[in-house]
Image (cartoon, rainbow, N blue to C red; front, side, top):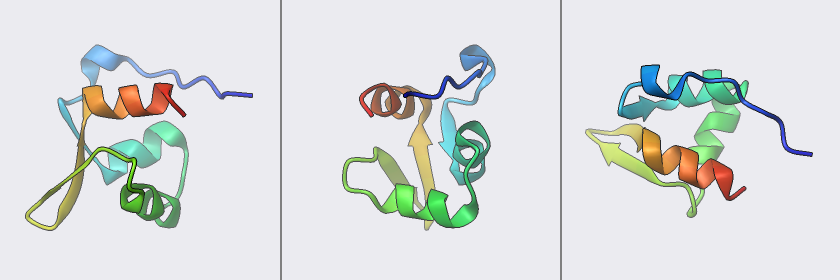
Length: 64
């Protein structure tokens, strides 16, 4: 069963950081770190920060 996430898409920043992902998915820091390490996760590594484009994140999420 897929869990529905209630998020106002238009209010989110274009680029999400780990804390944004944690909050939306209701996961802890360790799970978020593991998620960003997955090969199929569309992360961006900018100045040692794990980021993800909002659009890419939701496309990835829809395919899970």
